[in-house]
Length: 465
Image 1: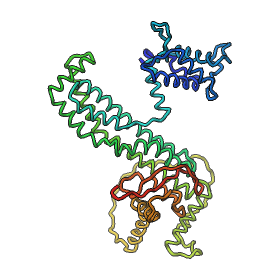
Image 2 (image 1 turned 90 degrees about the vertical axis):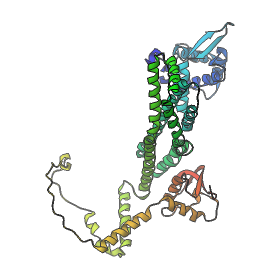
Image 3 (image 1 turned 90 degrees about the horizontal axis):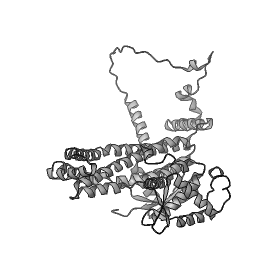
Image 4 (image 1 turned 30 degrees about the vertical axis):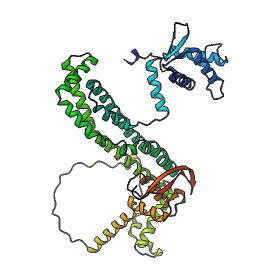
């Protein structure tokens, strides 16, 4: 049970009204103790450090309700001693007296683990996947202590799988958060600054390049499968696992085979997780671009809808070479607005009843001759649609056309007329790809054309890079 190890009131300082001051004090104490040979420091040293903290103008204040009657308004040294007493009563630290009668304050072992985890969360530290993968790759090459090594490989593999699943979940969180953004500025900030900084640049890009599982997986699987058929390896590994787990050699042998199977199976199924990450990444970028494009061309209000209708009419008139006074020749306008009467309106009136299942009676289909003109019209419409798609090749050609002989340009120097801003978004998105003729370098925040975004250099790649 968790609370057989951790005191029941252990999380009280992080859930109390004074959680800010307690957490800042815990961080300061941990910073002092982590520089020592152990997590134990003389009490007077910690009191002095906390006293300096409470004397500073940036210190948080201990809430009135957390202090006993008569303790409010006491000196900084009194507040420092008060915090140490409270942390000891909550089970974060304990005090011991050495042979020189000097009191030393130590962090509990479980408190150290929780502090490290909370600091990782607070500082948004991202997992280095190569740390897991390269460690596993190095461990499978070792020939000594096979049992202990195999247990370490199993732990590292579980950590890698957990990190990949966390990355997948984080992308899903960003996808869900898109609906919270109400304008183009918020969407582009979430995509180009938040998402690219915290997901693509820190995790996703490395996962596909330097931290790519495929580079190390064949060697790892081949070596573990060879070990599973090596009786000498199994005997030595089982002996070490039996010593560590305090079980019989037969049970240890089964545990060794189980761990080998778990690791190899995890590496074989890792592609499913990575493919899901790729799918979610593509879905997020597409959803963000589509939502930004929607806000750039229309809106939810009546004004935005009218703008969408007028834009469509303009494309239709231009395509069919109609005069503007001949707009009423379009058949679609007859169905654009429909007025009808309804005698009694309630929620049931808008309900569409579910149709029951009907027997399917196949009918004879007459062979129809396809009209050549209609086919040509459909083909032209499809070609026009494909021509409007901004593929990586088109964006790359567009960058070369704008930059001409220049080696670098700021994104803010690119033209914004027409669909220029949309093209700028795709330049940022496709800049991570290896086959593009340019690379990106992030710059400071800027504002251009009513949009606030992080500017970046577009730098022409050298030949062969």
